[in-house]
Image 1: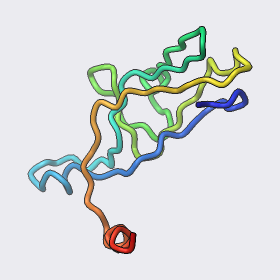
Image 2 (image 1 turned 180 degrees about the horizontal axis):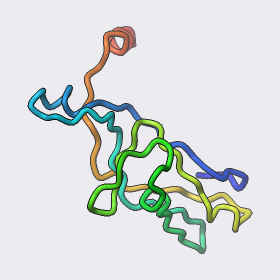
Image 3 (image 1 turned 120 degrees about the vertical axis):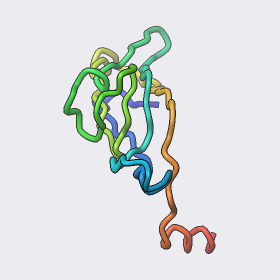
Image 4 (image 1 turned 90 degrees about the vertical axis):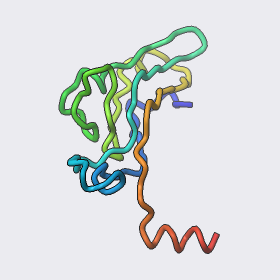
Length: 116
């Protein structure tokens, strides 16, 4: 749920580099988080497809545009909710995660999981 006064959100996730997770034979050193496809903002009567992650080339926290209509996040991706200002009610934000990166847990994360 997105409250009425929110004008933007951050999509936050872990990241990893394909060369670290898949293997050194993969020469891809980008830090990738989630591969996001469609994003929709809706309330009880309206649906607003959001395309800024596909249309704004230098949008903060997003990797290069893929050939298909999707884009990788870099772990903390900015998403403006330009249609949000048109309504005074809370809305629901949905985004389609097409893929995620596997990641290697660091030592600190391993210790936290052992304690829990």
